[in-house]
Image (tube, rainbow, N blue to C red; front, side, top):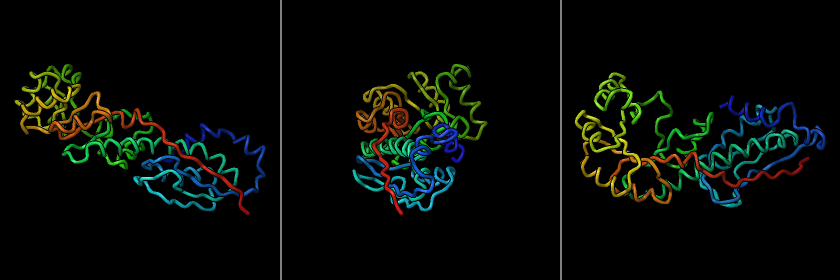
Length: 271
């Protein structure tokens, strides 16, 4: 993650934090506290070490809460002590990472809580911020959901366009089996469903069905394959989908629509 942090610092600080340089004596020391300002699930706190080290270092950093911890308004997440200029220059980059990643973790925790008591597991997706996928998926996991594939390289997910390009469900599955990787196939019609099961598919993706439609399809599948539901699934309806017998429900909203949570940084002078 060092390169991502370096790019973020370079983007914000550039050749120098002109405000801090102009206003704050070089030798001035300070201490700061990162505070939760609302209930949240924390993620990204480990990046604070890299942020400060890449900015010249600090005297002391105490991490008081860990990724996955539930925080309430007023909780102190971390404290830091060092040159006031360094703390000021790093403030926004540190908050940007913590607010964004904790927003993802908080959304993930809400999804996980919504399906508690069912046998369904929540999956995240590849609908992540470009360049931040590893961090956002770690945040989703901290919130209590399961990571789906990291990219196009670690598992096979045959979607409708792959089926069209391969020349049908059978062709796509037969060719994919040579990879030795896990295989999931999307089916959008009853004909594709029957063909996939006939060809021995063991993991099916059902997209853009209503809960009632999904329940009907799952009854027909009758345990012959694992089932993932996706498409239009939100925090408001996820329990309806989880309750129809699916093994997995995936939602891009966990990452692409997560709201940045409210965190603050409070600085004070020290001797």
